[in-house]
Each structure stands twice: as structure tokens, then as C-alpha cells.
Length: 224
Length: 224
DNA sequence: AATTATAAAATATCAGAAATTATTGAAGGT
DNA sequence: ACCTTCAATAATTTCTGATATTTTATAATT
Image (cartoon, rainbow over all chains, first blue to last red; front, top):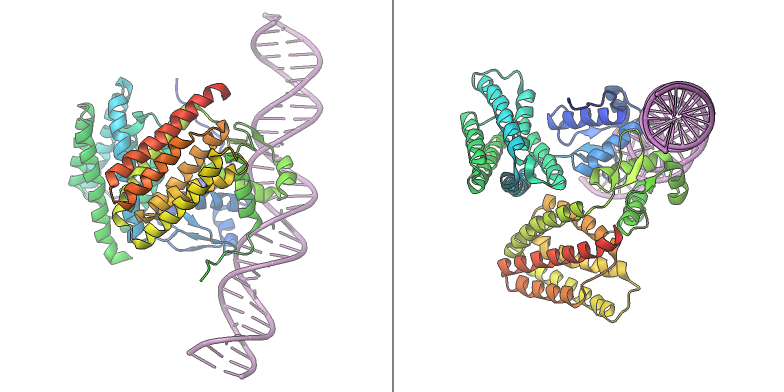
């Protein structure tokens, strides 16, 4: 029974995804003014559709929409990155602990699979193949999601998704990674999760996120 | 130096606020279909403006927007209420602890003032004057906000605001309150905060939220 | 340099209409 | 009764174009 995938997306959700993607991956730079006319051509969508999209992104915090002055890509700052990281630690560690105590066999299976796919991609990255950063990050996301999938709270999962994306934008901004350290942490989290050691898994996760934060902050000195 | 208040709100933000208010206070019932034509008259806004508004509310979770099938007020459920409450505990307790350790004199002043105003309103409620539920809830919000105001994280404050509103919708749904218990808890939180006893304040806050949850869940048996 | 006046650009809002999709209800078959 | 099919209707999605208002850019004046 394969999962039904909606064949026909609407123009609205498709432009939403594209613009969000372009913000996260830096195609649209932090602080950049999003003038409506140019965007119309770029994303081949009408003014109304664009405004709907930008309003959605504004409410998620990817776009700034000061009253009567149009739309801007939300700027970045060290303080914001720190806040986002702290919140990600708070939510993701909490979700992880819940997930580890709730997870069933199905969950373990998905987790192992997600880690395997991530690990394959990590090997390629370590060997210097930087051609698929986006795919790599997608596998990273899927692994982190698989870890907390069994937390049993849709609300928690959706807040976490938001924070993951905001955190990701900063990583993409500095385009640097922690190589083998992160790989080891992923492996250690997998092991701790399968061993149902919530405290240990949570501890590693916190170090994992804070390590990425420190790394990104360091690299940001040269950028912003 | 009075705080500058934007004199002319745009039609967009005004309808946004009105619809959000109507969802939280049950004027628009959970699950209700939000047909665009009727809404146009009701809120005197154009179709485009309405769609922008509903998209914003959808991304915050107050509105459901299934692809190609229009808009609905997000339904309520016991599970959702439990999730929202748990998240509110997680975020608000965390913010409270940060706030207590960061708060300065200014913060203490605002806190005392907020509690005083809330308490006046609580007296009226206890005496059976139920004519100003909305004002009462605004003071409740302002007190809880004042408690965590010094947490030093805009991101945390904005996530908390979202959860407070979702929690509030459930309270308004069952229209019941815990009377003197809640009053005592507010007072105890104020005292613990001023005494800089973060652990105690956090403990009371958790009991405060979980108490409200239990109360609302009980009342929901009869409603939903 | 700072301020003010003027022009240009951009936004916010609306109405109307075409295209697409969902819903309804009737008709017919099992 | 129950389910399917099909057409009619309703609603949503999307686009265009027009207008009023506001912001931003430019020029002129003190």
C-alpha cells in the first residue's frame, strides 16, 4: 500500500515551497526586499497568489512584512541564531525523550533506515563530494525527524519542523559542516535510541545542536 | 513618552485580528466552514484580503486549509488540548526560569503592576460579575506575559503567545474557571518570582496550567 | 546640512471573470 | 437499501486590471 502522493499541487503551495526553499538556501538573501512585480516573473504567479504566499511565510517568520512597506526576507543575526538553537534543543530533546519511551518496532525500523540513508550520504560528503548538499540535508532532516517521530504530538512536531528550517538557513548561510564529529553524533544517537536510553540520547542531541551552533557562530564572524 | 500606537491599521491586519478573535472566543465554531462570499460581507473585506488573512491563520493553526477545499475553523479535540497544554508547560516554564534569572527592576515593576490589575479583575469575577470575561482574560495574558517578559528571546515569546491563544480557545469553549484556586496560584507565582525562586515559580506554573487543563478536559466531556 | 516640496514607485485593496475542482442529487444498476 | 455514474451546481483558485494610499526617491529651498 504505497502512500498516496497528491499529483496536482496548486500554484499557491508550489510557490510557497519554492520561495521558502529559496530563503532557506540563501537564493533570496537575508534582508532582501521582495518586490512584488519582479517576483511575479520569477515565480510565474499572480500578485494575489504571491501575497498569500508571502503572508504565510511572514507568519512563520521567514519573511518580514512591516505594515504598508512590503515584504523582506527576514534578516539574520547572531542573537536570533542563538535563540533558535536554544529552542531547538528544548523542543527536540523533549520530543526525543518522549519518542524513545513511546516508539514501537515500526519506529525502530524507520529510524534504522533513515540513519542508513543519511550515513551513505555522509560518506560521500566526507570524501569531498559536495554536489548534493540539499539531498544531504534532506536526509539529515529525515533522520532527526525519525528520531522524534514517536513523540505522539503533532503540535510538537510542527513547531520542531519550523525551528529545524530556521536553524538550517543559518547552516546554509555559512556553508560549513563539522564532518566526522556530526557523523559520530548521529551514530551515537541512533545507538542510544535503540538502547532506549533517553537521557543519553538527549544529552548527545543537545551537544549535537550546540556544536553546530558554535560552528555556525564562528563562521558567521566572517560573513555577517 | 507615550508608546506610539499605529493610528491607521491596514484592512488586512484588522480583519486578521477580528477573525482570530472570533475563532478564539468561539464566535466562529470549531470545524465551521469558512465560505469566502459570506465572510466578505461579515468582515467587509475583499476576497484577496480575506484569502491573505485565512492563509496567515492557517499557518498559525487556527484555520484548516485543505487543498482546493477552502477554509475551516480548526477543529478541537482532547488530544490537541493535551498537546497544547504540554507544550505551554514546556515553553512557559522554561521562559519563566530564564526570566526570573534575568529580570531587572523594570521587570519587577511591570510584573507587580500586571498582577495588581489582574487581581482587581479576579475579585470582580469571584463576586459573580461575568460581564467582562474578555478583559479578564486580557489581564491574565498580560500577567503571564509579564512573568516571562525578561526571558530574552523573541522567538520564545512568540511561540508562547501562539500556545497561549490556542489554550485560551479551549477555555473559552467550555466557559468555566477555577475561581480561587487560580487566584491563589497567580499570587504564589508573583511571590516566587519576586523572591527569585525560579524552581518554585516554575513548579507552581506547571500546576497552574495542568490544573486548567484538567478542569477544561472535565468540562469538555459535556461539550465535545 | 537639514528640511520641505514634488514626482515616481510600490503597496494595499477591490471587483470581476476564467479555469479548475468539489459537491450534490438524480438516475440507473446491483 | 446500497453503490456507482454522470450531469448540474457551487465553491475555490487564479489572474487581470484599476484605484487610492503610502512610501521612497528626487529636487529645491532655506
